Amino acid sequence: MLLQTFSVDAQEHFETNANSKTTFEERLALKLEYFGELVLHPGLSVGLQYSVIKNNWFTVHWDVDLGGYWHRWNNKSVFLKTSIGSRFAMGPIFADLNIGIGYLHAWADGKIYQQTEAGGVEKVANWGHPHFMPNTSILIGWDGSRRPWTVHFGPEIYLQSSFN
Image (cartoon, rainbow, N blue to C red; front, side, top):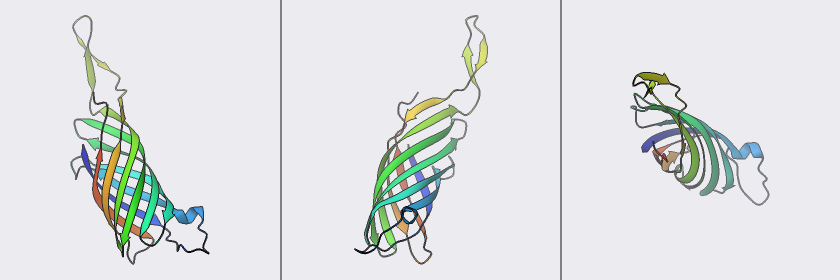
C-alpha cells in the first residue's frame, strides 16, 4: 500500500563545531504528519525525531511515530513505527531517506457476522488483526527562514503483513 505523507517538524537547530556540546532537547523534534492516501484514506501521526549525528549538510535521525488512518468501509488502523533516516541538505532544501519497522493493528470498519452451527448468523466481536509494518520513505523538504520549523512531503511505502 502506498501512502502520501505530509509532515511538519519543530526542532531547535544547533551549530556543530569542535567546541559546541548539544543537549538532548536541542536534538529532539516533535512531529505531526498527515498520514493518508491523498484524501480518500485520511490519517494522522504524531512522533518524535532525535538527531543522532548532524552537521551543515548531513543528518542521521531516529524517529518514533504513533498514528492511525481510516479506510472507509474497509478498516480503521492504528500503528506504532520506528525508523532511521539520512537527511541531505542543500541550502534550505533537503532530501530525507528513511527505513523502518512497525506494528499495525487493523479493525474491520463495520459489523462482523459469522455463521452459527444452527445455520443462522450472529454478530461477533471485532478484535482486529495484527500486522508487521516494514516501511520506507523518500521525502523532500524545506528548512528555511521559519526555523525551528521544517516542512516536508513525499511517498511512504509500507507493507501490511500478513494480510487476512
